[in-house]
Length: 105
Image (cartoon, rainbow, N blue to C red; front, side, top):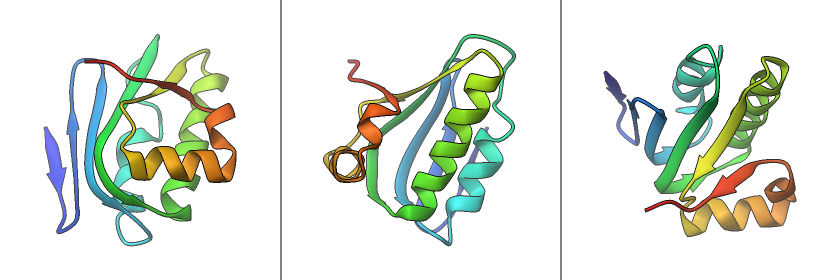
């Protein structure tokens, strides 16, 4: 199951989501629909962001809300393979300290 807009693609996998394209004010609601409420009932929710070409404050807001909701449910939101654009925004905003970030093959 997946959803595609002109600039954002989100696909569900067994362990979470694969997100590619641009996350901005026009696509953030679509990401919200996949992340909130946190899908699944336990464990880790992985969000692969290797192919994210752009993310703004709207996208960060969705990720922060999803992270908080996951923690309230005794779960863990993990950002997988953040693209250089995503990594830089996390560094600049200080959110690399908040999110669980990992690189996987």
